[in-house]
Length: 436
Image 1 (cartoon, rainbow, N blue to C red):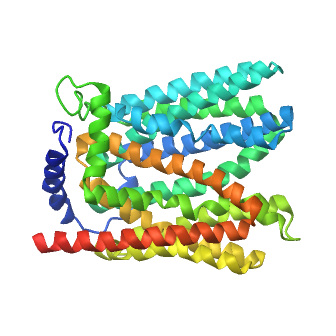
Image 2: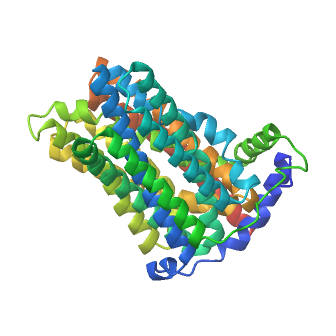
Image 3: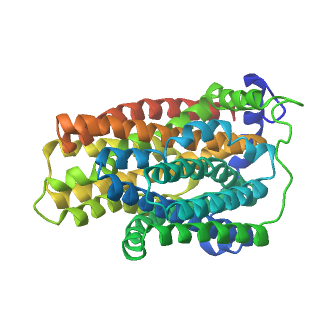
């Protein structure tokens, strides 16, 4: 869409590009994907970024709680890591198209390194002003995550194609899920053992190494759309055109909404502690950790199976049904199952959520290369913002009813929306097949 300002032109661009890629269905292998040096560098940079993100979140939430003893302020501190996507997902992700993507990622890493080092320096002061200065700096660190992730997602699509891209995305999603689980658990140990300042210094080091990997092993590429949707267009016009591209195209809009369904099936993670508290065993900390791990673990398994062992055509056919399943299985929480059964339910929900690999692959096929950065930024931004808002709603409802009831309600709402999207996707697929 880089040179097409109107929605109709964007749709023509989308339809012209998509068929060319649909014929690429040769099964790829892990060795083939990791043989690509640029992908290895991006993968390692992402792994470091995920670990750094969790360290900063844990360090700051622990610090705020220790100094204020306020659960509300601690929760708001965690929310600060989600709110920047409301700005960054729309306003900054376009940088991944206007500027060379490798340069955007390196600049974001170096800026985040500097901000986290500043946070570590400010942490030496015990004043309230210093504390909230650190929270403000954390907001800026997270704000830069939007263009970084948008550039990385678009760059992976530039480096890998066809089934290599699907398997590369599978590897990326598995790494993210496992890295999140390990990041939260090991990050807590780092903060407990070394303290907040040491954790922040470790976080800064991860950003420095990530920037070095990108500078050494990812080759420079020109900007995909240096002038935005039209020559000399304003940044606002560029941003508006990106939104129009996604929302005006039925295929892109449906696929993005499939991605946003994560809002409903990850609610158990937002209510992990109060849900675990209702069981006499295991201990609260252990139970909370197991709930946090269950959905990402299931998603890693489901993503591997769908991305590695299932054919591309079958992935597309299963996507709608699996999306429904990822939410519908949570309705079993209405029966107030025991702890082992609950973990099984959350793991199965995560496994069904592996459908996201099919939605992601279809999304990258449909988006013009010069608009991928902003399209991925919009999709990721929506995920983060809706999760943050829905977690607040879920917490309020769970307080009035119960965590199990709220999880079941969230699953039911998500299942209804997923069923509507599945019907829409089937119609779009049938119409596409008729045009062939």
